[in-house]
Image 1: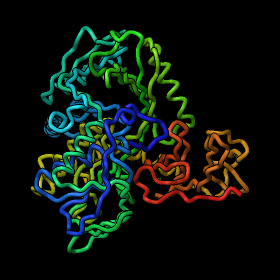
Image 2 (image 1 turned 90 degrees about the horizontal axis):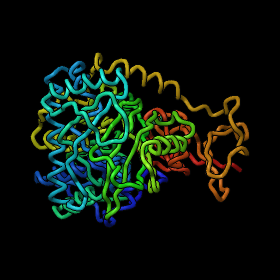
Image 3 (image 1 turned 180 degrees about the vertical axis):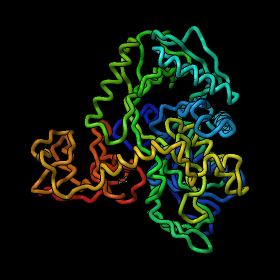
Image 4 (image 1 turned 135 degrees about the vertical axis):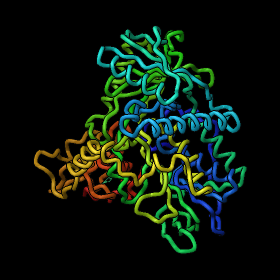
Length: 507
Ligand code: FES
């Protein structure tokens, strides 16, 4: 299994078998084309197929290539936007509805894991959140009260299965964890068995709405469909949703401890900003600690390797590590008002749907999206339709974030063709490094690989021209504006951009 980064995640390294998703494109008009083979895409495709619809998944690379292959795989009913804040932004009724959706999604994952992916190590877990000072304790009080107000279990506890002092701690029942790659493989296999079409290496290039059907042009040819779902983490092309979601990067490590007894029993979170998260995973007899955090806005960290050093040193301060076995990072999208966007793609053909803005809850919300989208397509309505409407204008709820993100984007627009004063020169690039440099009076995004070969591309993002930034940890060019990512030769790794960065000749 390949991923959209240079580093190998624990999940990639321990998949059970490669999925084969290559075949003939269907000739007849399909009910639905789902674009993207991550948890959102495969869960949606399987639900649609189970509802009797003909369905094809078009994945640009391979299943799990995007964030599902790089998640830390927490399954939560308690979401990043805490329920107390959700109540104050959206009201108690909507917050209760979101909580009900989160429970439904977690239940769906359990059922699918038991039925189709018994080797994905799904297990129910308690989650613990602990405060380390009075300010955090006050926040924790509100989080617990909000969680109880929407009808989910939350209580204060005296003990946390974690080696850190705290002033207050709470426990939340009904959370879970699993091995996301093995889960996806299970979904992919059963989807194909049920007659679904899975196409890997099948990037969707264009969608042309014709009266009879949507004409979907892919790298492997054209198919026609009555509906299309963008399950690409963020939709491709240019959409208002790109201005309502900000891309972030999170860092994860897996490690073997000297004393297994120290492993946390449950999902544990501190309340720092950015916060850290910890859990245990048993893979093929190996008991590993998984820890993550050190998040930052995409393209806003000059030395992404440093974040791994920071994370490792933080974890070494808590546990006695025998070995760090894996380190990886991945991207997520923070929605402006805190809730995901699931439903019809705004300002697009009525037959096109989207799911995005999952924050750090991609496993739960990607699955919830599959429930909402299946209802919207098959029943023309969903109880969650309004609260997740991608066209909602939550001026009060998301206004300050929206302005902040928009200003940030404008700050990165537009890539200048001429080098800024003080820009490094090409000669300053060390092997393994990447920078936007000045070369012969032109700015170029250049990576020098270990063999000394230069890989040079135009730094203007092919989406809407922000300047890309080097991500040394994952060896990619990442766009700070809307999160497009490209490999060292400019090939698209993740949407919204559909086109590669232009290659340039360094002479
Ligand atoms: Fe929008 Fe780069 S992702 S400009």
